[in-house]
Image (cartoon, rainbow, N blue to C red; front, side, top):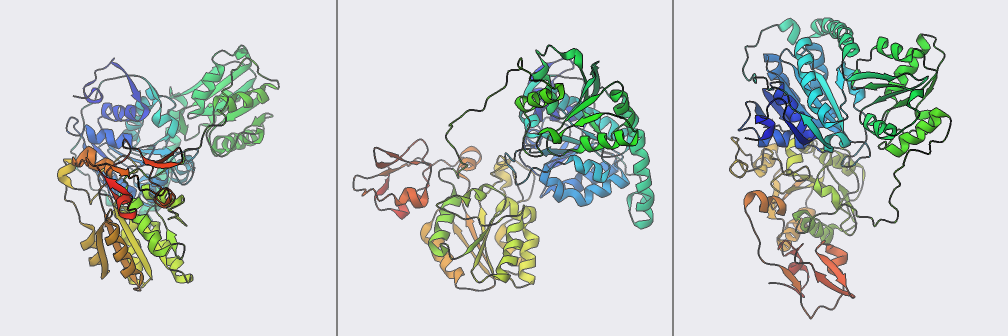
Length: 608
């Protein structure tokens, strides 16, 4: 059995933050886990999935985050400790049921992992989901180490069960992906079955119920403030007159900066790990005797605003420093940034702190579609048929990487599932054709409603469904269209084409994505039609095909001596397996996947 399941109290292991979260949930006796995968949260559900036959919990990859929130919410209402995981933008999708769960409560206990992504490492925005804690009334933990990832997850379950309220575990990319020593504790028996206690005047939020439940929520938040006051995750240390309030991963950066700092006697620090609800008593105790305060928090000035409001309310004469001293509301913090802010707090240059300098003159390495990716073949064919005489509506997934030249297959993008709806709106007001792209996982996630809308309102749009048989961008997780046999799942896979036709689309074609002749023929036929048209471009992701499906292609492409070095293969297809050496185009056999698309576009390329 895996150490995350079998590990005993006192054991020590080096874990990813995401792995530590799983261990914390297992120690807490989690009985129900659901998710929609999204980086940087993906390793959490992937680990739960990998261990589902060893653990005692139920796990599922849900269709989208809203569904994941609802199924976990249903289990929590029945009395089972439940967890739902997603990335920060996934909370937007799940917000509707999430807000109601705060009102009606979760008797079994429920922990929501929101993995934020400062610096947009793999996201379309940097939103700060601490606002959701305040918007909905969710007590919030923010770990800064692997040990805290485990401990805070476990504590969140304990308090969630005690107060029957959902708790948020808010992480950031650096926390999810750091590694650290984790000391295990005892595993509590998992609760997987319960007897739902019917209380319609609590659990059915018609207006008369919702009004009263809002009062209950506010009352419970006041009670939970006492937990904040005594929580070991909130620490005051130091005795100086210069104060620092710090939360999240910035706590780790601060510790690095202060590790060899000789003037610690001048500094008093409030570290916040249990960050919401804010305890006025805790803040005021910290501020006692402090003359100037620096507030360190990535992204939005949430703590800063709350501390400023409290200082004003209490008529305390104290200088507050935060975003007004050069700390940005975008990107990630670093030891360098915090050291510079500390210099401003001290009023002097800190020379003893070693600052990390950025590497200069590093070559840019933009993200690229993999060698042999079927999306590249589809995009190449679309460009041959439509060129620049079309607008391309993109979506969230690997295929968004088609934005780069020479493919240039992404002109606009809003969010998961938006390509059909936004493309439909665009098509209504422009004279050029609109081609929308969506992946198979995204189609099931939130593309269905957009397609229903397009059919119902008779929009004029060509939708290309890029079906690579997996959720490739986040690590090859299953979705409703993935073969159950290949993923060893007890589920019922769903075919895309019958759904598309059932919605009312009559102009549907399905082709193999690596077949250029078939692709171009289908695209030309659909181009000359009006209304909603769908092309299903089908081919497994080559990485998934090798790893899971057992499909191996032994042949490799090579360039013959007759090559006239026209460079079209590089300039139009741009497969990363191509490279130029001494002025000649060559193919790197180590990168070539054997898709053989290049053979179909150039007579000087052969297979061996």
